Image 1: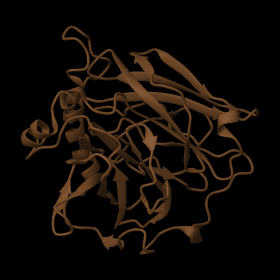
Image 2 (image 1 turned 120 degrees about the vertical axis):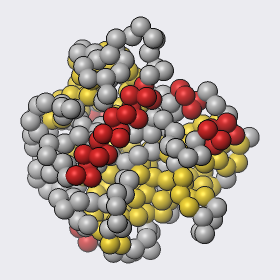
Image 3 (image 1 turned 135 degrees about the horizontal axis):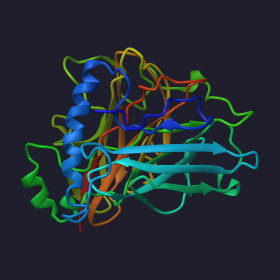
Length: 327
């Protein structure tokens, strides 16, 4: 298996860097196991996207995306994406851009064809003044995998009682761009051991821990699930969990989207500042309002806020969760 992009990483804002969603050079053993599992899940989830005769792109067992990005002197975000590996010859991806933690209009989905560089941009008027950072990434489009979208809530809950539904793994990490004059958020303003907005940081549990957002089912005495249902207009609780490795401590901005829209999931706030501690579990409580009937995708993101070059193995993207809205 090769990295998702073969180009060497660079400092943020200085040319090409890999857009790898779960593969990194020389990962720790748990990352290797997760990479092998995610390759199988991705390949299976993509099998129904293209036609039966559609040729694969590069290595079909993974998603490979290469990128370039920069903030121009005029303040525009200019970026490119190239599909290098997939189970099918073309995919659609939704670009997301955050300015100081808030989502801005980045345009509609991009059609990515194997080996063909696609340029896109966000004008300075949409970026505005940047005090801290510009982050960008891409998500699968449409948000809900076709295999799940074809099912009702009852059918999906019955089919995926003992296994994860397809299409929940993200395709990329998050790029950080910091223009001249911008600075990281103050460290003293971040949730660490506990600040009332999340759960206390805890020692790493035994075994592997998925970095994911999962629904709280069955009340406080219940468990967590990646597929749940709730009436339209109701609030649905979830928990965001992230376990930093030995190289994974540092500042983060945690935010969540429902489908393609950023939501005020953390006590009415669209994002929360977090100080991740290596070997300590980050667990944040959040809620969303079910916006309408049918399927929705909850995708939480961790936006890095390091001052300078960050380790390329951190933070790993979070696994998403599906929500069925009952009419």
